[in-house]
Length: 251
Image (cartoon, rainbow, N blue to C red; front, side, top):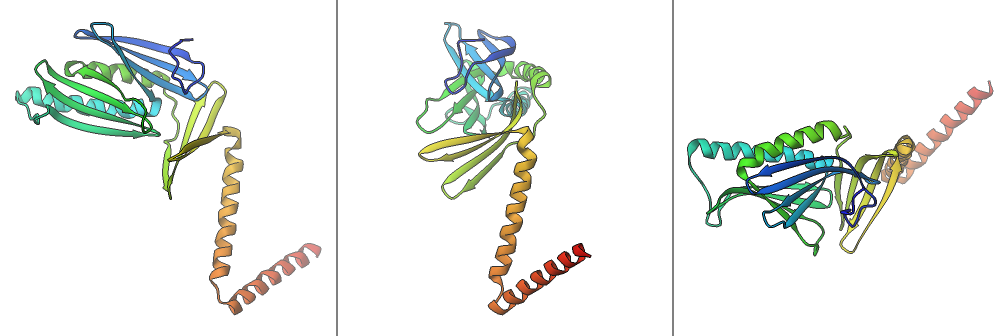
């Protein structure tokens, strides 16, 4: 267990930890698990002992690994060409990851001390931002370490779903913890957030119920779209079909 639990998570169990020394900085990558599933914490410790950290779900960490690899490829191409394309603020390339209720901004920049990747984590509106700065020379090493952790600890689960409806956003995420696989359905509005958890054993029942509801609503929509006379004929046909079924059963 660790005392550095994120405020929105419960008790945590540490599954794996890696340390990388990149120039004067140390980076710690910890795979942890709580009742909501597994996640990765990436912490940067500077020369003066100052700490910064990011939290990523396993899905977000996997996407981050892919984007990080592309950033490293771009950085290597700059090194081979011995050139720089930095803008006035030192920006070379940028990217963004949308994951559930968080966003991660990746900015490859250059200043007097060299090239580096700044990764910024943004949560809900008004929440403080978190960011780390990775020396560009260490990106390949970080990709390799993430590969190792993801290959050993990431569960092969379906991708999440994000839906906008009116002024709401719905998130459906399949996760796994010590008690098994479950689906978390979150409803997010400007002024509130709520969620329900559905255990894996209830997936089929929920699926069947939704299918039945959709079919019934589709039938009602067809009936309501018919002229009044056609609707009565359709009703007679259904009644006749039902009578034949009953008669056949009696025979």
